[in-house]
Length: 384
Image (tube, rainbow, N blue to C red; front, side, top):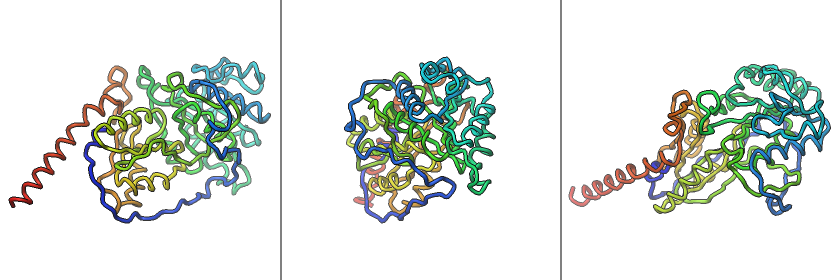
């Protein structure tokens, strides 16, 4: 990542192709207006908590504020393998928070039916790696339920929670990042938070949204990420990216746990005189093109990073969209720093991940190449 940052130096001004957001008809336009107008930290003092505690608090609020809400999945009644549902069954009863058989297709199929009866169904898939048996239910049922009935039926009250991504020791079947599979499906939303306060607000928005949502939770951050989180009920808007660090030389776009890696790269780049603008996409589908385009029109450069393999990753969609809309403004090719095109490894995880060590090792080579090329070009201009 920072290796690519070292390539960039100057900027030039050309027009950027304008683009206006299209509100896609496959999504319901009905929204809940509980999003605070002021920053959530200013609304009410919070307390320090990690990401899994923020998820637990969001589920508690969802169950308490709406009697139509249900939470279920494998071991959910016992608190779940990551403890995100601890205490919910005791508080709200086993008829609203309960275990299911080990059958992902059945879990999601049941959730679709429950949501179709005007309920809020929050289904947990224990690991995102095991969401694939439910793929048919999500893609061919949940995503098309409203469309195929001409709006007569819908399962918009469906939210599917799934821990995703690397965890340091998960290996092939507990570390994958499958978000790109679902970003290809019209009719569902895909949301990924980066921190506890974001997780709580985005999860409540997802549960109350009028469309089916796949909500991926970065399990690496369940206990690692800790911050002040307001304890009251609040929602954060979906499909609105956030500029979490302003800069002028290059735009960096990511989501989930990768944001912390990218922020470290931004700090390293700043020491070398490179100003980075960092954007958290938060919602992958429908994603906030305007915020990214506005940033790229300012910096002229774009780098996208995610844990999933580079080929067919969602970074490719972002890259293609930005090239189409900001071609005249780009001063360099769009870059991607992602996972490798291999199954997720176990002992070789450090080599697979787009981590800070990989960024640091690759940083100097492009900078030396650019410096050498510039010196050579200047010599030829002077002496012919």
